[in-house]
Length: 121
Image 1 (cartoon, one colour):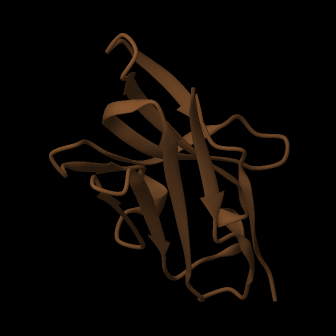
Image 2 (cartoon, rainbow, N blue to C red):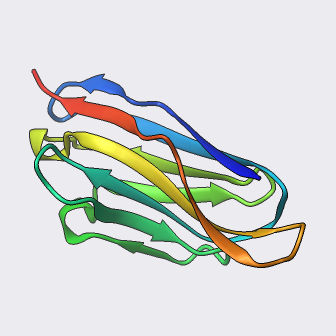
């Protein structure tokens, strides 16, 4: 079994910064894509950023230039550094990983439990 555990959420003032991390553990052979999604109240879950194993990245337009996704393959961990936060960034943030298990090498999708980010003065 594979588990994703997020940390780093909380309350921040507009213009502030916050960092998230998500560590994967369990029967992991390798991890391909790792992503951050977010879901605001009354809205659908949306992709925020993605990073592939080779380090290539993609960002949603609303966060380009403000958010940075990174990963440590040795630690099976993905990070999200968020700068210049504004109230529209308020949401529950979820990490996601495509993981190949040591049991059968098949890729499966796993999600973190979600962490609340609130941007407010």
